[in-house]
Image (cartoon, rainbow, N blue to C red):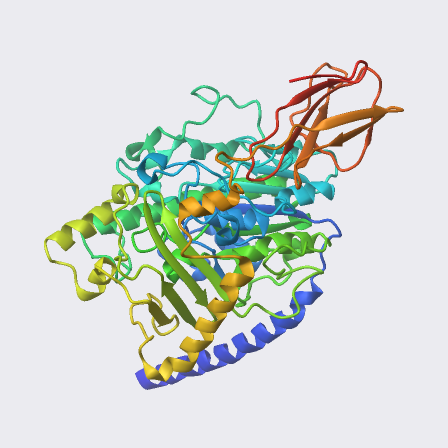
Length: 591
C-alpha cells in the first residue's frame, strides 16, 4: 500500500511540475494582455523588514488570511529584490527610479550619526531632471497620498504628495480622481523584536485610515515611542510553536521567542492590511485598483537586515489586478526596486523618463526583455562602514568585498537591541557557535564570493575559488564591472568626498534659490533659478484659508487681482527655498 501511495504521489508531483511549467508559459503570454482601466487606481501596501515568512510564499507558520486572499486573487512574485538590505536607501530607489549608490543615497541615515562619523548631515542629490515618481503621477492628474513613512535619504519637496501624514488617504481626493496611495505598516520592523515587546501605538492608525475626526489619546497623534504591552496585545500563535530556525541562528529559547515575535507581528500586520482592503472594498474601488503588497527589504533578524545576502534583499510581492485577472498565479521574473518607478508610469500609460535606471515590468511600456540581473550595494549603516557590491541572476550571486580586511559582523548599537543578536554574541564569547554560525564573525572576508542561491539558499558555501564555476564567476564579475560606471557608482569613494561631490565643492548644503514672480494681464509666471527645482503654490480660497496640498506649477496660471498665494521651490537634495507670500493686488512679496 505504501509503495502504491508513493507512486501516486510521484505521479502527482510530475503532473504538477508539467502543469506549473505550462501555467508559467501561459502566464508569460497573458502578461501583455491584462485588461486594465485607462487610468487605474494604484494602492501600495508596504510593510517593513519582511522576508518570505508568509503562506503565499511557502511558510505556513502563521495564518495570514488577508495576504493569502490577496495572493489567491492575484499574482505572487517570489523574485523581488531591494537595492539595499536596509530601508532608506531602498526607498530612495523606489521614489526616484535611481540606484541609491548613484545619487549619494546608499549610506544609511545621511542626515544623522554625525557625532559617530564626524560627517556633516547631508541629503542625496539626484541629477536636476529627477523628480519623485509621485510628483510625476500628480502631474498626470493623480491624487497621491502617503501614510505615513517617507525616509528617502532626502526631504520630499512639497510637490511630492497631495498629502503625507498619519491620516493621508485616497478618500480625500476629488470626486472620480484616480489615486496612487501608499500605506506603510511598521509592526514587522526589527524594532518589533526589542524588549520590552509590544506593538507601537502608531499601528492602530490603520483602523482609522481617512477618519480625520478620530482623536488620538496623546497630543492628537499616535505615539510611536510608547508601546501597547505584550499583556494587552493580540497573540496570533502559541509561544510553543515549532519554528524553522535559520541555520545562521542558534536554536535557543531567546531566538525562538524572537521568532514568535516575528510571526506574531506579521499576523498583526496582516490584520491591518485587511482593515485597509476592507475600506477599498467598501468604497467600491477594489476592481478598479491595482493593489501591490511588498516589503521594503528582507527580514529583520541578525544576518538578514543590512546584509546583501538574499535574506536581506529578497522580499515577497503580491499584485492583485482588477477583476482578479491572472488570479492565483506566479511570476518568476527577476524584479528590482529600481523597476517600481518606471512600472508605475507604464501602468498609467506614461513613458518613463530616460534617466530612470530600471525597466517597467508591467504596462504599455513594459521592457521587451526580462531583467537578467539584479544589483545591490551596502555601505555605511548608522555608525559602521563597509563597502560591498552584489549582482545576482536567476541562480547565482556574485559579491565583491572592497574591505576584505574587515569582518562581516560590525558592532551596531541598534541591531544589538535584538535579543537574538545578544544571544549570538554571548554564545560567540563562550565559544558555543557552530561552524555555520561562526561564519558571520570571521575577522576578514574574501575579496570575491559566488553562491548558488538555489542549491545553497542561505549563501554559506563560497564557490568563487571552485574551477567548475569559473565561467559564471567571470560573467557576473563582468556584469558588475559594466554596471558600476554605467550608474556612476564609485565604491571606494570616501563619504566625505561624496558629500563634497554632491555639494559641488560648497562647504554647506546648497539651497534652492527663492522663486521670482511676474504678473501680466492676470497671468502669473513663476520661475526659479535653481535648475531642476519643483515649484509649488497655493491660492487662498474664498473661506480665507489655504489648501493642505501644494499645486505643482508647470505653466503660467490665471489669477484675479487680490488673489493671495504661497509659493515655494525645492530641488531634491537641496534645502528648500523660503516660502513666499504674494498678494496680486500689490504684487508685494513677503518672506
